[in-house]
Amino acid sequence: MDVASENRLSLPLQPSSASSARSISCLGNAGIQIIHPVVDFPFADWQKIIAVHLHGAFLTTRAAMRAMIATGRGGCILYTGSIHSHIASPNKSAYVAAKHALSGLTKSVAKEGAKHKIRANLISPGFVRTALVEKQIPEQAQQLGITEEEVVKNVMLGATVDGEFTSLEDLAETAIFLAAFRAWR
Image (cartoon, rainbow, N blue to C red; front, side):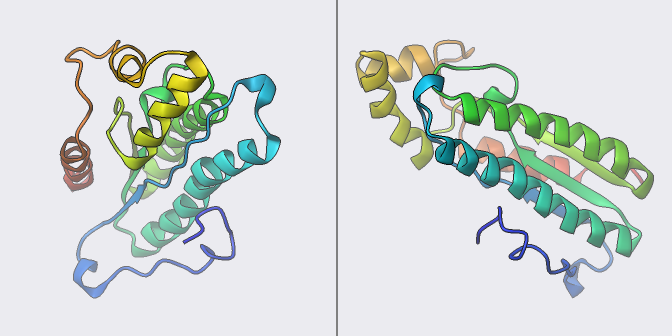
């Protein structure tokens, strides 16, 4: 699915009959990564990252909020941010900009959605060992002139408390917890 295409996400979301007695949850998790120094960053790649991360989140959010408001039961909108929603790294200007913007979108949705019992949260993990991260390891090693092991140890995990990647299970459990939390009864 092309989350950055308004035509693809223009149909209204319909709650399933199984969820008719509960609130709706929406998880915005689409993401891509392309790394270049700012001075060499192709504008088309910049636009692609912004489109997937930010336009996709906006379009999904708009559709989810409309469905949540229509049910009158509210819901929960979750976004997968990143450590880069809060800090920056070299060669990731578009990704960092998109993730910072996603933090702002989350805050706006929380403010606007509150009167409709809609909550919004941003989950901001450290590095998760996914295909997206695996692809970055050799790219960063080449760009930074260091070994792949040094990229993992020093660039990706150097500032972590435990020196470990965040697990997919940690992310899933956090999302389930936040989606299940009922702020309004």
